[in-house]
Image (cartoon, rainbow, N blue to C red; front, side, top):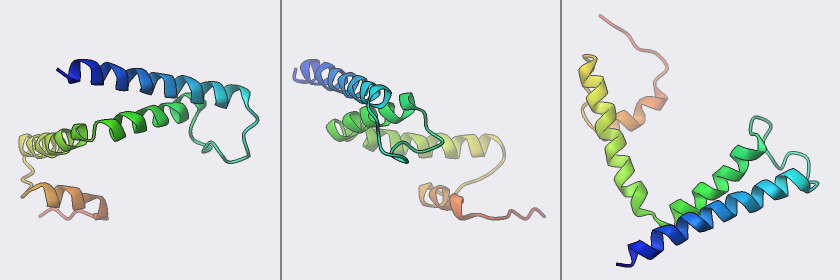
Length: 101
């Protein structure tokens, strides 16, 4: 019952947060380097909106993380790459080279 009110309120707050930050970024004279060089005003404002959703609904991360690991291992298996589990998949960012026999 509460989710029928909670989710629309959180989405409305996220959209409002995005709009406020987009207006601030568009009209205010922000300090140099406040917005990263590789990020535009839309994306910078969007990150604040996503933060509102993640903070208000942390269960979304609890559902998304195992789903991403499952999809990653499934795609690897369909391409002939067997991945032992989620911990090994998460450590793949440290790989510098792959040697095939």
